[in-house]
Amino acid sequence: MTGLVHIDGAFVPHDAAQVGVYDHGLLYGDGIYEGLRVYDAVVFQAEQHIDRLYRSAKCLRLVLPPREEIRHAVCETVRRNGLRDAYVRLVVTRGTGRIGPDPRSCPRPTLIVIAEPTPPLHGSAGQLGLSATVATTRRNAVDATTAQIKSLNYLGSVLARIEAQEAGVDEAIMLDARGFVSESPVCNVFLVRDGTLLTPGESSGILRGITRDFVIGLAREAGVPVVERDVSPYELLTADEVFLTGTHAEMAPVTRVGGVPVGTGEVGEVCRTLTKSFQAAVRDPAHGTPL
Image 1 (spheres, rainbow, N blue to C red):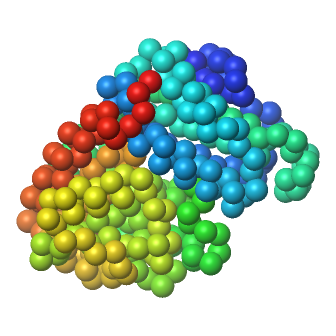
Image 2: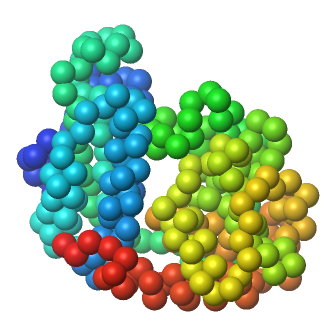
C-alpha cells in the first residue's frame, strides 16, 4: 500500500504506520472515530462529523485537540495523498497506558487520520440492489452503552456481518433488544411504505448518521413525508422499498430481504430520486469544507 498516514502530527508511510501495543484503543477498544467523504476536493459535512466526534469524546472524557487542528489534519492528509475524492478515517484512541482499563494511565490520546481512494462499499450491488438477511445478533440496548458514541468497539457489527457472509448475502439488518429494526452493521435503514419514508429512531439503538440526517432533509425538500419511529420486522419484509445510508455506502438500495423480493424486486422510485439528489448535493461546496 502506498500513501501517508497522519499519526499525532507526523506523516508516515502506510506500511510503517503503527500504534503501540499498550494503546488502549487496541487493548480495550477505548476510542472513537469518524468516517468522512471527500468529493471534488471538498470534505462533505466536515463540521457535522467533527461536532459528533466532540460529542463522543465528551461522553468518554477524552480531551481532543482544538477542532481547527483536527480539521487541518484531515485536509492535509488528503492533500498529501494527492486525492480529490477520498474516504477518510479519523480515529482518536485513549492513547498509550498500562494493562488494565484505567484511562488515568494514558497521559494523552492518539490522533490518526487515514485517507484512501473510495471504491464502492458494496461494489456494483450498491447500485443494482443488495440482498440482506435479518441478523440474530442484536444491537445493544440503548441503556447499555449509548449508541451515539461512535466508538471503536464494533464487535456486534462484526458478528452481524459474519452472519451475512455465511448466509451468502450482501448485508445484515440488525434488530434492537425489543425486536424492532435498528440498523445494518455500518448503515442506517430506510423503508418506503405507501409513499412515506420510515426510518428507525434513536430508541432503536441506532447511531444517528450524518448521511441519514442529510437524506431526511433531501426527502423533506422533495415533499416526501418522513417518519422516525419504531419499525417492525413485518414492515421491513413488506416494504415497497428499502435502502441503506452511510458515509462510505452513500445510498444503497436493498432489493431482497431474507430471500424475499422487496416490492417489485427492483430499485424503487423514491430511492432513485433521492440518490440523484444526493449525488448532486455532495458535490456542492456549500455542503462541505474545501481542502
